[in-house]
Length: 567
Image 1: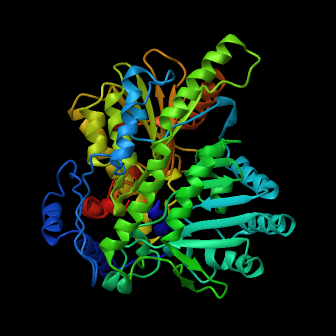
Image 2: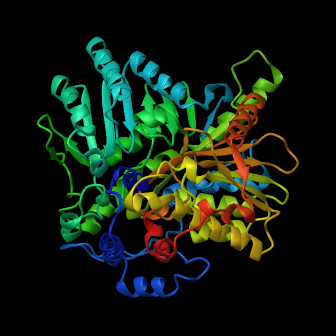
């Protein structure tokens, strides 16, 4: 989540009014560079409204950059006619109820055994899992994260990979990180990994994704940290041989100790691991490559530079490459589902046969700059497809739902909702000086506006809100759990990097997976994970926003409509 950059901004106490004005006008200037000035003015005029409708921006950022309008593709990624034809013949999946069979149509499907899925609930266990897999990998390690931290735990993780590379000559290790976040400060992610590519140039490679939206004069004027607001590589995917670890957690100390997130391990799932390896590899080919002297360059066969080349050509090249990988996997769905049906029939006759394929994994991608919208397409349709009296438990570390998601929940859904977000004391920005210290108040304002909409629409019984609070811990979990009507265990969950916010939909590279299962053991693990998170929360009421420590300053209320699209 790009808002994390503000946590490292430390102003001196007694920030002057002129400093505050400078920040406000900087936000307006930045917004003008990203949205047309008329839209900025309209937003400011309507800032007192209950909620500002999110309107997709057009962009004009520097020389050689044409305006980019919000995509409206008929298919989530832009499937070819051949892939569409294959989708029409897809059989039904016995795991999904009738109202969710559409999930099979435009997304790749991976049938697996539920016994291969492990749900981790503790950040330290997440770190031990990464460390153990790094120590035992035999042929590939492929990691995608926002950044790599620089503390002792991170150094031990890097050292484990280095030691393994010295033993396994066939091991290949690839990192995909964000360029702006990975380059922040004097000692950063690049400096952490530079010795590895120097020592093992044939084993280690590091790619740094640079958003095409940060270019021209915008790139020149934006300082470190602030340039991270424009767009990031935000996917959290960790492939070790034929296993995948997917999470919303970055690779840094807080996420290994006391920052609560979600973590799923898919052991021995080669097709799923291969798919995400291909996605990471494809994005990496359009990214900058870290060199042994800590400089960066593009690959020799690169079609167009990410921020110096033609904007539209770069975006189209990336989209076409991702679409190719996507269509190839979608084309295998019919065959995989037929194999799944045969497996379930066979396991039903003979219990001693191979483990049943009682679980399906459906990946999603969201890459706003490239008009790849499979995640938001699925999320919106899922929220409105939930049955009457079904239950959705939805979590976001940064509660800033898009207007479309809010309308789906408030107007288009019949399900019961429990929404979990961070209490200000679990925000991580509480007590910070200067502008960063106002971030908890900003999220309080967003939560208050949504709560008021619930009351105004008389939906506070159907939709309830909760705040996570645990001493000395912060909250970063995101995703949802779906319970069918009158069922005590969830059928389905979504887990990954999206926060369901504006920038997750429009600015960053995101991915999550839908996991639907008939496995009682896995359903129970999903339920226990949900209870673990909600167990440290309290319900939001009207009194929540009336206490002295939850009052939102007027200036925060004023700038929220302007800055909310960077959260």
